[in-house]
Image (cartoon, rainbow, N blue to C red; front, side, top):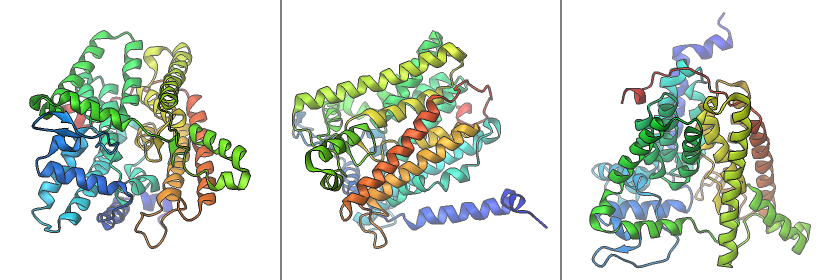
Length: 436
C-alpha cells in the first residue's frame, strides 16, 4: 500500500495539486480586490492610450508638474508590463474595464508563477522546498489575484537578483536589481542591503559590475522620460509616493502600535481599540518628515548592527545576501512610517529562497501567516466579496485585535531571523538566469 508521503511525492499528485492551484488563481482573475484596482486600471489605460507623462503629473507640452496628488504610479516598469498585457487582452476582450482588471491580475499572477519557476529551477541545487508550497501559501494567493496587488512583479525581480548575485552573476544581478527598484521603489531597501554586504566583502570588481548592470537597466526603463525631457518631473512625482500622512496604513508595526497606545491613553481602552485600526494622521509636515527620516535611519542601523555582529562571527564575506535582504525588509516594515499591509510581501519569496534551513522554514510560516491575517482583516476576499470583506470597516475592534496578532507573529519571526546563522551555503544553482 502506498503511504501518504509517497503519494504526495509522485509526479501525478504534483500535477494534480498544481492544476488545483492554477484553477484557484484563474478563478479570481476578474477580482477587483481593493480600491487600489481603480488606480491600476486608470494608469494602465493611460499608458495604453499613450499618456505616460500625464500619470506622473506632467504636462507633455510644457513639461510642468500639474498636480501634487499622492496618487502617483509606482516606478514605471510595473506600468509598462501591465500595459503590454492590456494591449494583448484588449484584442480578445472588448469590455474595456474588465480587460484592464484582468490584465493587471494576469500580469501579477504571471510573475507569481515566474517566481515559482525560479524556485523550481533552483530547487535541487539549493535544496529548497517545492515551489508548490510557495504557490499554495495563502498570503501569496491573497496578494494576487484575490486582492490585486502588484507586489509579485517586484518580488520576482528581487528573487532573480538574489539568485544571480549569489551565483556571482553580478552584471545580470545589477540589471535585475534595476528592474526590481523600477518595478516598485520598496525594493530599494533590500537592494541596498545586498549592495552594502557586497561592499563589506571588499570585492570591488563585483560591486562595479553590479552598479553597471543597474545603471543600464535604469537608463533603458527611464528612457521615455529622458528622451522627452521629463525625467526631473518624474523624480518629483516619485517623491510624492513616499509621503503618507498617517503613522501606518493598516500595517502591523511599531508606529501603528504607538498610535494605538496613544489612542488608548487619550480615549480609554475600549474607544482606543475601536479607533486604533488605522494609524494616526500626522498633519505637521515637519514632524512627519522627522519621523520618516528617523525611522529610515533606525532601519539602516538595525541592519548594520546585525551585519557587524554576524560579520565578526562568520566573516563578512560569508554572510548570505538573502539573509541580509530579509533583515532589511523586516526592519523596514516594523519601524517605518507610512507602511501599508502589503509592503512586506517581498519577505515571503525571499524567505522561501532560504527554506532549505529548518529554522527559516519556521520563520517563513510565521511571516506568511502574519501577512495573511493582516490582509484578511483589512480586506477579506476583496471589497466586493459577499463571503468576507474584512473587519476594517464593520468590526474595528476585531480589526485592531487581528493587527495585534499579526504584529506578534512578525516579531516572533523577526527575532528568530536575527539570531539565525546567516552563513552562506556554497551551492551552485542551475537556473535560466545563470545562462543569461
